[in-house]
Length: 329
Image 1 (tube, helix red, strand yellow):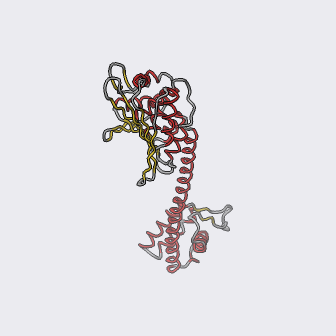
Image 2: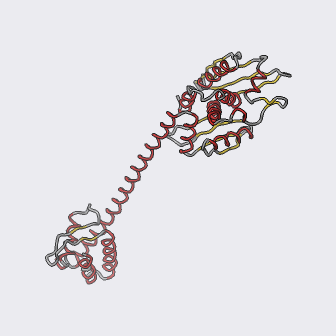
Image 3: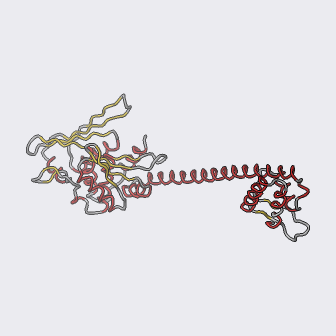
């Protein structure tokens, strides 16, 4: 079962908040995934097609509870996509026109409504039920292990703008995207997706999305730390190699015994521990009362100057420049 199907299954089991909430949910489901046929004055029929069993179950349940209409159900199996297609037909019935007006799908004397049924959406719980029905009928939510994305595909620009406005009243900043013959009301922000899921009543799914985000954040933090450590190790390795090369050059030119004690100890420690970071804490020289510590920035600056001078004048300058380590210490 996809994550979208899991969310819709959870939404189909939510209890309504007030007496008008079932009407709001049924109106949204019928409007989003239903097809209305007109065969003359007062002669209407509806066909609702969906691939989600939870949507078909909710549609039939609400239709029977609210209006007691006939709802023949046809289930077809798709061998190509290995899915089930549910087709709910509401044939011509005497009460159907009045029921459609009650749902706000038809407007008496004017025909098909273009926007949301605002008479049914006076309460916040009814607005949440309406958005819940719209999502069940035409919604999609990406697996949170990938990208964060939620959308509701609808027809009719005014109807799409009304859903955006209702989502904004629920605290969600939704956006609208025009597609071929339809409109997509979508949300890409993690916080907005969680707020919308909780507003619709899918608290379990909202918790699942939150857990995935925390796992992503933990993995990203670990990756950043590993990458930073590897980069630091690479820089330390490169710096150590340069220092070892300069130490070898100084040893060939003048010998390490000719260096000041602190600098000679620094060179010996570096050669004995090439894998250590540039921080080097040497032993206490006899003429000092505290240990000498050379920081990474100081050692890099010193070795750069030594290398430059040693390249220009190999013998005399190496000794003079390396001797400045004593002042750093």
